[in-house]
Amino acid sequence: MTQRSRQAKTLADWQAAADTVKPGLKTRAFINDEFVDALSGETFETINPATGEVLAHIASCDAADAERAVGHARSAFRAGSWSRLAPARRKQVMLRLADLMEAHRDELALLDTLDMGKPITSALGDMAGAIGCVRHQAESIDKVYGEVAPTGDEALALVLREPLGVVASIVPWNFPLMMTAWKIAPALAAGNSVILKPSEKSPLSALRLAELAREAGLPAGVFQVLPGFGHTVGKALALSMDVNCLAFTGSTAVGKQLMQYAGQSNLKRVFLECGGKSPNLVFADCKDLDRVAVSAAEAIFHNQGEVCIAGSRLLVENSIRDVFVDKLLSAAQGMQPGDPLDPSSFMGAIVDAGQHRRILDYIAKGVAEGACLRAGGEARDGAGLYITPAVFDGVTAAMAIGREEIFGPVLSVFGFDTEQEAIALANDSDFGLAAGLWSQDIDRIMRVTRRLESGQVFVNNWAGGDQTVPFGGVKQSGNGRDKSHHSLEEYSELKSVWMSLSS
Ligand code: NAD
Image (cartoon, rainbow, N blue to C red; front, side, top):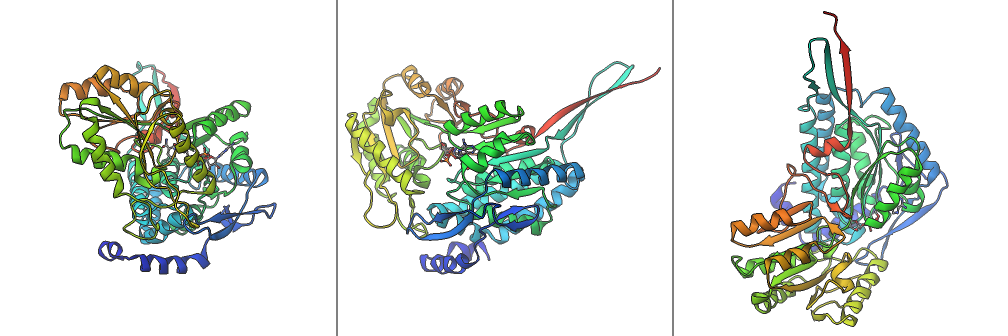
């Protein structure tokens, strides 16, 4: 299918595509190259949050399935069918996988949209990110060299970079396939055996990916997918004595648990991409307030606000605040939620009833705490879990809506008078994932950028980046980095070899 015909798809086209895809959904775990039921025979429902429809009953893996998959992953690693394959050959297989993902791009996007409610246009954007990541990591791996250390003549010392072994990737539901690709692509490229645990709220695209990985030629046991709950199969992987690395994207609370599990078990490497409460700083000297207002609204309302780097704290210089907030409200007005299958919907449905309730509770708390709700924050009647974009003004750092990650379409606007005050407000957070700043003053841009406690800083944009730049947080937003060649470092270890030489 060409790009042109894809863009031209209408709501009716996507509805028809959904009807075609549903009967063939993959529902079983993928272990050692086969789709199998959970050993317990248990299943769980996955539900379309835009309609309430039960899409499928998915295998609910637990500790027994985890043990089985870890055994196969270890055997595959030791056998060397992937771990010792020449990097250039691993590259070929991974490029085939990327091509297959590209060929099934609309289907994969549709699975994520049906499973967790994101707009189809946004899901298609995720696919570009996921496929780009697999290609980038595949292309990188045969360009990684070891080192010869600068020793004297008495020795030759090599520094080799080797895969870790068995990597368990535990991922969330907000960008199901893209977060998956960010984790599995560098881990596989580096030669590891990977066990993926998708979120119980969005398992469908991961299971279809397993089928594509098999078709691409990944050997048995090298890539396995275990759907199920965090407290069952996720915990079992985290406590396993034979998993070498936990690569996690999800909430800070679960990230903290995973570090404890690693300490209780085998000191596996734990690398975490967690939550955020990202500040977006708008200085009075920025250019084109209309454009900045649209970007600031997109920064929070994209993907219904279910984004780790959502620009959920908007810090505006008081001299322009009233004018700016009016522009922001008008931008937000054009970002209402709608049917996720409709290509004109900017926001879709909230992932499930629990998250929907949680967001509405935060909105009620914001009002009770004295913030001014300028617009939105309403649930829509009907089966679909929708919430209109909410803008609170006059928020302070003491309020829950100003400090805690809501993970929904709720924006908190703060005012500031000086640059120092803006920096202090921005850094007054447990999180440090992303920050934005809008200004035309290059001295200010450099000063503020250096002082922001954040894994990434967006200057005169929000969420800019591509496969060449690392992504990750500081403080309680986590450690380690996805994307770029730096992510390969997370999934490999150095081995030092000292060879004595006789003179
Ligand atoms: P979550 O922490 O509830 O779940 C994430 C994954 O961990 C799921 O697969 C879940 O089943 C699993 N899990 C839960 N409890 C577990 C346990 N005890 N042991 C092992 N695994 C367990 O997060 P979520 O609700 O799926 O996703 C939302 C969170 O993810 C937000 O906090 C968001 O900021 C964060 N996130 C971060 C990034 C990033 O790159 N920093 C990207 C996307 C999402």
